Image (tube, rainbow, N blue to C red; front, side, top):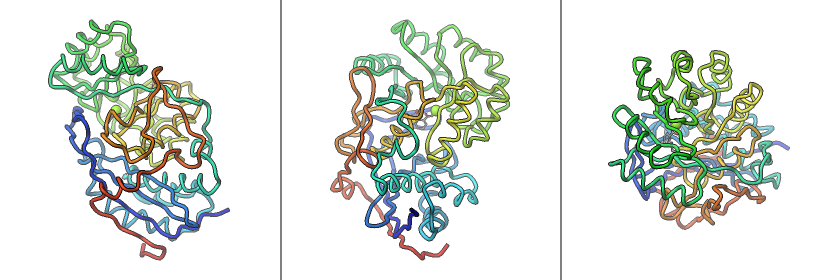
Length: 376
Ligand code: OSB
Ligand code: MG
């Protein structure tokens, strides 16, 4: 059964965060979220473009996503005859970079296909290795160490299984020392978002004494080779995020021993098909993976939950409850986390949650309908 799309609807939402989120590259108060709705046979599938508001995590941002979808991505898909959702990635491969924009379109077609088949999304993508996924949290850089310790306490009390803290030069060794003093036994890791270079090796080596599960993407966003040199000098496992944009990158990083763990983000690799291929490469090489987040709305969160049911997602990921980010999420019920720090998967067709259509309308600042036969 092929998929013949009738139209694609784009929406740009503004969603204020309940608390600012600060990484080594920027502080965010409000998210700009772009949703892709793909319609066939009167059924809608949903995707979310996970890029940020500025081109600081990768090259994509709100301003690049919208025209790229309209001029290049949607025309290549809405006018195609697709045998299945697996056809979307190769049809967009002609576009260089911009994986998150392509991934938003791709995920919408997977969700649509799941609904047309009457399957939950996790089943459609070949997941289902677990009925609940293990959850951690990502805690941004705070204004004080006291605030950070307070936040960690709150998340541990809520049941989260591991704590990830953001670091940067000036907010690293001394802060982690305080965290370890207060919470000696917890599963703890640090994410640098590319804030260091090989010149910082001795500083990063000081982190070895804290027994971190891993340090995430310490070096440049597009580097694999220097990470291999750093990994050889560290006891702490390196986890790669930004620099793994394809299964080919994963294979190269593993071959060079650039890290021992991979964070898989659905958007960063261009959608479910490539995320699964990255997963398969890691699994075949004994590299555990976990699912990263990009401050998603409930739709992106639900996609991440489905992805996290693939077998090699054995480590707690950054997929957490809606209420950590949103006063009210666009999915109903919101994504909730159990007292043992897990999210249960849904057996309903598609991504598994209802959409709050009224709220969606209220949050939308612009939208565009693209029907079949838009020019490519
Ligand atoms: O590097 O994992 C990251 C958020 C924005 C950009 C990059 C990252 C993050 C997070 C947040 O760590 C994870 C989440 O969505 O909870
Ligand atoms: Mg990261």
